[in-house]
Image (cartoon, helix red, strand yellow):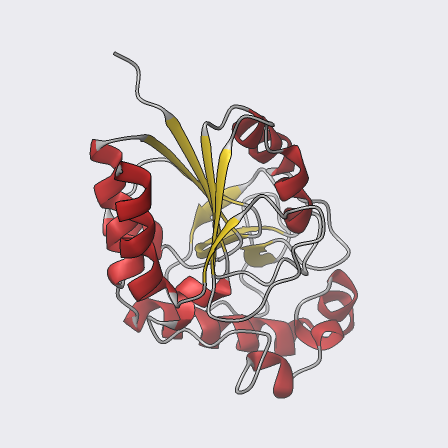
Length: 228
């Protein structure tokens, strides 16, 4: 018997509870560097050294992090559903928790890619420096989708959402596009949930059942609702 499809969109909130600083909100990384400086293609062309140093630091922080109860609960749901996770996060905490179907919209901090060829990707081990070259002779850069770049995984993400029987949004403000637009691809028959401790605008999402809690406590409550 086929399991029902549960599609989950996760954002920075679920990783924040594992100690990974978020770009938005108090204490976020945006406060030390502007988006344009470190998270845009223009910033890369302007100052590659700064961008590499910034992402070397982010990668080191991610290496220290461990999955939390929210990540682990999503893994547990695979016993009952076909779980597909679409994440805006560049850490690999979902994979570390054991989730088997994870789509990274904005890239991964454990991978580097050729500056010229997005398909030339390799494991990222050790700090990246200017002069570290890929096999095509171009500079290695983080395999991160920056502002001003296309999101290659969006087509796959839309396909997953359109096939969902259940849909959950966890730990994202739904302010970053195109990812935020995925909520408008949900089928009409789909049962929808939103887990976030902060108020989230529900324009066009009034049918979402809200659990106003952080991921570590909210996702276990989501499980109880899903299994009822």
